[in-house]
Length: 377
Image (cartoon, rainbow, N blue to C red; front, side):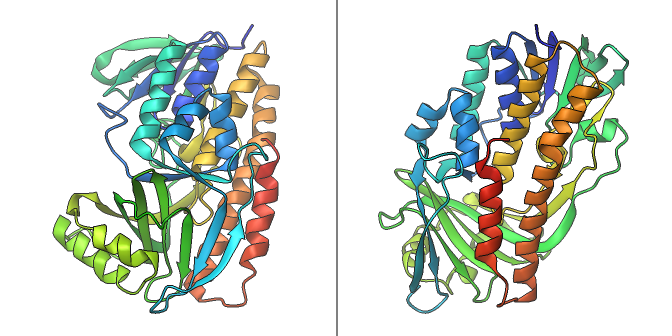
């Protein structure tokens, strides 16, 4: 019998939806509170590495992900020269195992819809436009006040509500994401036929430029620059800025740039990072995903780390007969150091770019993390 009978998961992103699905499949009654009215309405592209795909297969959604996403097994490196010269085509690490692709690019709203449909199928009760207002934890459970004043009691609350987690704030944890010094432009756009994998351009007027196919007819493109205050730009000015930065990158980027025409598809955010010291729980409330650890996307491991958190937490809760120190120690032993290494390596790669380090051994760093995450969490 699971260690918990009734669980509230706060946050309907990957970490929260995955936790809800796995617990419900294990016989637990789950409520999933999501502050957005429609969690599948927003977002651009997402890169899913093999270790993320491994968990998505465990969740029973791999067939849909395969159908809606775009799989590839190589990584291209291109020069920021007038031709976008291909410098290398590298076999990418299949961190989810030899029977899964190395990487799948996907339209984020499609993935959110697939996850929420699967959660409903598992019996999860989804509460849209809902968050937590108050938490009172004791030895046996948590009394919760939800948006609008609804109250409930749960055996456990899982805070999976992102980088600026409200659940974390309610617990009194003083952890704030720290800017890394980089900002990223992203745009979702039609896919030119010659784009069949991620290519990265290092250097030029920006730190990184690249793109990731997300489906038969779509991709997302991105350019990483020194972090700046871009908040005063209109939608058209954001598009114009991204086009100006993109003009330095060629090869397939020329065809992508011609398709960058919709101002509403362009967004700009800063890279931020944090890592919560162990433990990640306070009483019967536990934080996972970006609420506990976040890293810049330089290694594209954010989604994978969130999904791994969900898989490990659900496995322990379903297998145990009580929530006790041994369960939390097992959770931390399997998650804290692993997530911490990914955060540190992601930051290190970004720092090398900020410093213009030409002697940095990027392949060794990427290989070390690939070896780490190839072993299931």
